[in-house]
Length: 79
Image (cartoon, rainbow, N blue to C red; front, side, top):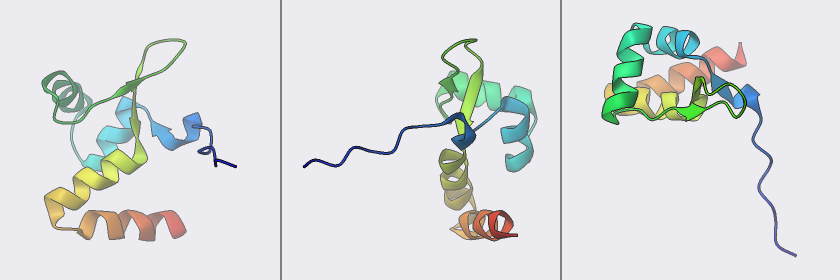
């Protein structure tokens, strides 16, 4: 039988303010990156607010830091 992917939950996502804190940028910078396509936000299905997947943020940090961002995020998550 085919395996179905696990359902996506809102726990996998961060708000603009939380995502900006993780990346060390301002919320307006994050919104600008969304408008220009540097980092794409998903939208909340009910209110339309921008939401960022934690995995996308970790990938961006890894690209910017040569992989150190993902390891730091994994270490932080395990604490």
